[in-house]
Image (cartoon, rainbow, N blue to C red; front, top):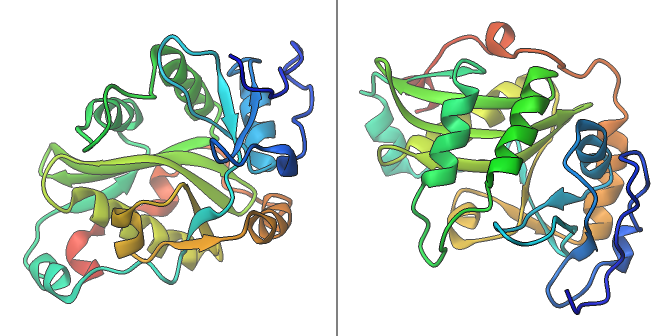
Length: 244
């Protein structure tokens, strides 16, 4: 790689460069290399950094400016969509099909994107975080059929969204709205959405200066009593119709 960005030291506990050192072009590229071990990943998220790279590239670490976030009280579903949910038989739950959600996100068609950033190494890394109780999925089921979902990482009182998918129209919207509702009930104010796109903005995402995001992040990841371990029990089963 010809860009002048730092290479991470080999030890998984080695620190990341300050986010302010990230490049402007490409926006947010902060560091290269390292590994995807749980200590490295958790350290990255605590500092507002996430991995994002394609097959054949070295591991690339990012902290973009601005940062895209969802306040958990601001996820927006259109009136038309909510009217349709009133008659929905979909049910939302958590951590019952993490690997399925991960694989569905990896294979989802996304306009303008070739391939996936959820490489085999990334898949293994997030499955490892899930087994340790730090990575979680929210699933939307129509009967036994998975029709939508979202997955990400939780630290303290902060949820870092990684990816979502729709197997049927609206499945990802329901997963996101249900996640926001449950997190809000627990006093968690933010979902990190990383990088803006028109779809996220239509659902209520906001773009914050990186400095503002990092200030909130430092406070939220330090909150005691984070929800480590399976979320299935406390999340329960939420009828999608309740989101109407």
